[in-house]
Length: 166
Image (cartoon, rainbow, N blue to C red; front, side, top):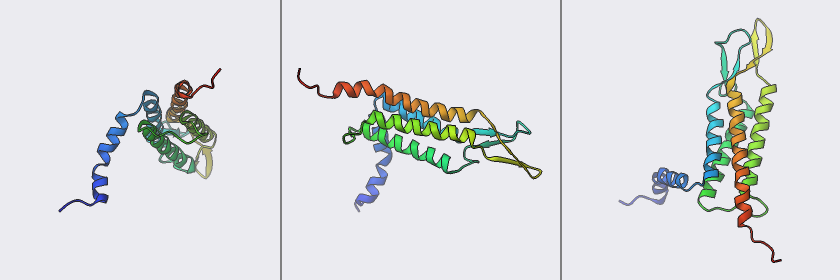
């Protein structure tokens, strides 16, 4: 019995994903690495208790709209990189490098916001903010990597544009 199209598509998804990852250019790979760093930082300690160094809160543990937005940015940036690696060109006036830069700046702004808007640590009826831990800076580094990848793409896209005759 032949497989239907819907099941055939799901079975070939890992191969298609691997093929798309192989088709990425250097700058797209850098952007995907930045996304992976940002998402991976959510599993690490973002905040530390003001009382003890052993009490930490991960990005997932303090999950709010900001962490959800970081996940969404990482997914959208990875999707754009995979599409760009497959030959997709965004419609004018959008540019792939500009979308990467915007996504990285937006992610960095969200991480900086979470640096100042920390979850409360409640002890004895008093709310004290958590202290920052290293993973916040790892997430910020991931956002900066995405921006850097976009800025590295700009000269390549400029070279592709047709020039006006002199």
